[in-house]
Length: 601
Image 1 (tube, rainbow, N blue to C red):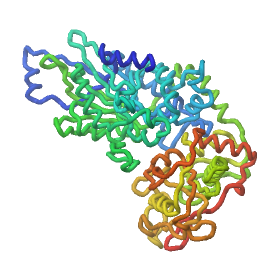
Image 2 (cartoon, rainbow, N blue to C red):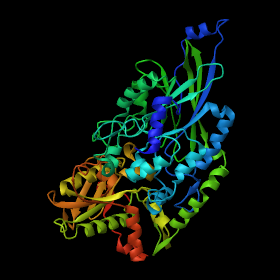
Image 3 (cartoon, helix red, strand yellow):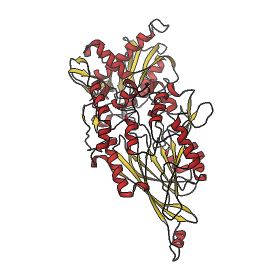
Image 4 (cartoon, rainbow, N blue to C red):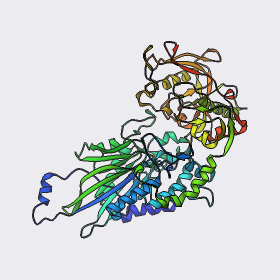
């Protein structure tokens, strides 16, 4: 166990020092009236809990993929440098001794900055650097953070080194050792707030992470860690916090509020369980929500067992918002009780970067900007993902071509070398572009924004057909002759773009006039109708291979090969080796959208 983990565990269990948050329902009217009687002076105290989530490596308001200040149509701004300014404002308003700061996870993955310090100049190297996110969060003064699923993307060693570099604990009550089933990270943290002339207020913070880690990062965690359900673990640990004297209990949960899961029934626990926790587990006052990348200023959920209200808030992602839980407490019958909780958001676009964060991390920022602007090849024409979600775009074919080549080379000389290799890829971004002329690492990184790695799976033709049918559910059923609005054609049922797959090496139509489950038409392989018994090697990213998106068959399929090198890196290597990025070397028309046999476009 790393030294700082022992420190935080001891601190939580023995001294009661830690971080805090508060919330809850109003006191009964009769009791409030009793306290208001003459001769019964009411002692009150106010606390403010601030929260961020899904920072994903965003320190500055900078888009490394575009090599420019970040901007969007909504006027948002992002980055911990902005959050630092907001936090300072709140501490000035409320008094630093009455505030604390939490995060709900997904910190060390998501930008070229985080990739650089995991892979190019890794924090795990002997004498290696301190992670920029650790530097920034320490400087801002975070009190605690929950583990996110993306904390595991670079392996346990990187996560543990990051943990050691923090001045605050990473909490994960439901992340347990696979053998002992004991907590592998501190489950909770308690902070004592001293109140002049009154009993101190103790605030307990419980950290919960996402059960989907068992699927998404199986290669790193299998046999080492297990991830239990959020509701079950909250039911275990919230009473413990109350027994340790916590007057207020806050949960920092890397889990959304929808009650749904992207991985079907592959894991017996709900992915987005934060509202379930509020509804089912007594004793919680507030929940800082993460994972879903949504903006929820305030959500009130009534606990089924106590009838008390739990206040939830999710402050968007990328440090674009800061949640504030304002908590009012009253001293009654020898103890502090939560009288009210309200939640609100503050906007990073309303403030400037904190100069201390700019100064602290300007060198790291410059190194990464130089790295991503390295030229690795030259494109003969502009390639874009603008219409890639509804047309077979050459830029996505580049991804599948690279994956095919890597897997074929890996299987050469094995018993599977003679099998045909097909590949999947998703239109992750709607704005990626590789311009004609010089091609840089940032151009290619913008095309493949995730740190996925490559896996080879063995599938039959029948399984490939089912895979394609499932993927085609992404389209909204559109009758022949009806107007086609491309903005309403995709994302049926809320399915995100990254859960729609191209599959190379085949030819097929997707008939969007037909109901889901019967849309794949004219499916052929090498000019002949697909043989359901034919065996294929599917070159697939690790997220999909481990069950991400709940695509049928792939998670259970036999794994023939896998690697730890990112697909993004493989694309850069392929382009560097070629020198010239020419669509004739990788582009093909494998699929099209039709309605009753007539092409949509």
